[in-house]
Image 1 (cartoon, rainbow over the protein chains, first blue to last red):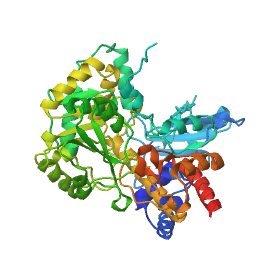
Image 2 (image 1 turned 30 degrees about the vertical axis):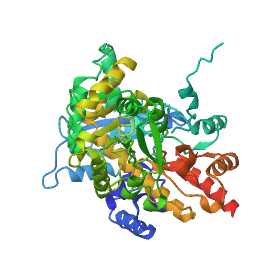
Image 3 (image 1 turned 180 degrees about the vertical axis):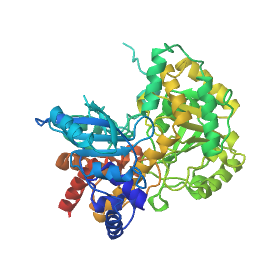
Length: 160
Length: 386
C-alpha cells in the first residue's frame, strides 16, 4: 500500500486522502494513517510545488556548484554535507561519484548574491579544496515536469 | 439519372454515435467522457523511432503483409503474453488498425446467407461489416446479471445450421466486460461441437484488471478456428498511427491477404517502424498505463457507489457501463439531458446495440481531475432528478 500511495503522491500531491483511497481501493482511514506514519518516519519529507519562476516577475538565479573536499577523519563526508546543507541558500546537495565530491544547487536573487555565498561561505570552509560555479541559463524540465510550453493534442469528443 | 447508390450500403444504418457527436461538437465547453481512445501520448521512444525512420527516408511501401520484423515481433509477443502461436510469414497481416482486420476477416470467411453471432452491446463495426459481405448478423443480447459475459446457454440458443462465425469482443467496448478462462473453455467446447469459427477481437487485451487476458486461440484445438484481431491503438496509445494486425490460420490468412493487398496495399510504413519499437520495448509503457487506468477505474466505481449509480464492476478496457434504469428515462434522453443541463457528454448504451437501452458508456481514459469534475456534474444531475 505504501508504494501505491507514494507513487500517486509523488505525481500529484494535491490528491486528497479520499481520492487516493478510491484510486487504490483502500479505506480512507487506513490511507490517512499510513500517510501520517510515513510523515513521522520521514519517508514523506515535505510537500512543495514545482514553480517556473521565469514566467513571473520575480527573478531568481540558480547555480550548480561542484565542490571538491577533503573528507574529515572519522567523519567522512557526512559532517561536511551537514554543515553545507544547513545554509538556507542551499536548495540541494548530493554526494557524487566522479570528478568532484558534492553537487550543490543554490538559489539566489542575483548572480552576485550567489557568487558571494560561494566565495564567502563555501570556499573558505576548511574541508573545501575547490569550487566551480555553473549558472543555470534556462530550465526545460524539473522534477519530471516539462517547463517549456506543452501543447496537448485534442481528441475527438465522442468516438465509438 | 440512375440511382448511383448500392442498395446494400444504403440499407446500413449510420453509427448511432454520429448524431451525438454533432451535438457535442457544437458545445466547446462540454466535458466529454465519450472518447474511445487513450488520453496518454504515444510513448516518446516510439514517436522518436517514427521521426528517426522518416529522417532516414524509410518511406516506401512494405510488403503487403507488413514489415517482416514487425510480424516476427508480434508473433513473439503473442506467445510471450497470451500463449497463442501463429507463423509470422504465413499467419500474420499488419492492417490499418484493428478495424481493417475485422473487415477483411469477415469478408474472407463469409458467403451470402452465412450467419454471424454478434454478442451485444459491442463495438459498432461488426454488424455493418457482416452486412457488407451479404452475411446475416445475428445479434445476441448479453445480460447485466452475467456481467455482460457470453454464457454457453446464450450461445447455444443463437446457433442455427447457418451459423459460421462467432464474434468474441472481449475485453468489451462498451461494457468493460471480460471473459475469463473458465468462461472461454465452455464457449470453446460449443464452437468445436458445432464446427464454427471465432473472430476474437482482442484490441483491449492488455487493458485487463483481473489477471491477464486469456486468448481463446490459446485453448486446445482453438488456434485453427480463431482469427485474432489486435493492434497498437489501445495498448500503446497509438490510435492515430493506424496499426493493427490479424493472426489467423494460414488457410484464412491467405484469403484475407488478397483483400488487404487489393484494397490497402500495405499499412503505413512509418507507423509500422514505430510499432516495431513499441512491441519490442514497450512492455513497461503498458504496465504504467494499465496501472493508471486501474486507479481511475477504482475511483470511478467508488464514486458511482457514493452517488448510488448502479454499475457492475468492469474488469477490462477503459469503460464503465452504469445502469440508469432507475431514473425512468431512455439512454438517449438521459445522455441528451445530461449534456444540455450539465454539459457532460457520455454515449447512450443504445449506440452499441438495442440491448444497451438503460445504460450509458462512460470512458475513464481521462485524468482524475477531469473525471472528478465530470462526476460532480453527473451527481448534481442525478440529485436533481430525485
